[in-house]
Image (tube, rainbow, N blue to C red; front, side, top):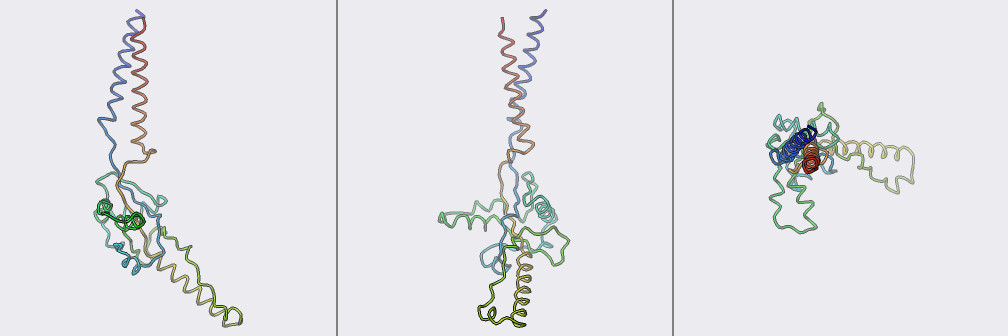
Amino acid sequence: MDRDLTDTAATVLLIVGVAALLVPALFPVQQVLYHETRSGTTSNGSELREQGYTVIGYENLSERGQEIYVAALESRGEYTVPAGQGAPEFPYDGADELGDVNRSEEPAVRQRLTSVVIERPDDADLPPPDEPVDRIRAEPPQREGAAAGGPETATRGEEAAQQLEQRRQVVGKYDLMTVRKGTPPATDSGTLLRLGSVLLGTVSVGLGGYLRSRP
């Protein structure tokens, strides 16, 4: 009786283990589309166009493109979606056009080919941009003006502050989004399920084989 029960348990464990090991093969890892807005730029629209970036007005994005951009800003600068659920205007395969470039130039060229610059409308009801506007500093005052002091120095200081704020507004108007296609991160729920399935299958097959081989 005990032997029959052991054999039955071993058979069930072996079946469960084999089925669990087959799960990753039946449901392979699917690529995902990454959207990152954390790279940032301190250039304005004209400078970005001269550098070869594609600049798209937020209102000219597709509805899906707008959804992804807002979601990326709300997700601390990174948002992923399954392959096939991206936006048509985003260059997910841009790196394929990299070609032969110098190793020193490759990072800049790769970023340009895989990025779009989103021009945010004035007073838009959008999350704050990820552009590094705080890194923009006012130019130091001229030595002559600083030595003279008085109202003239104060006026120059106010003008510099206004110019700095204008510069920050211009830079914050253009948000750089870099996209790519790749495998899901290790913390992805699907990846964790596959790892769990492999672990369950390995343990079940090992335990079932041990029970079956017992005298």
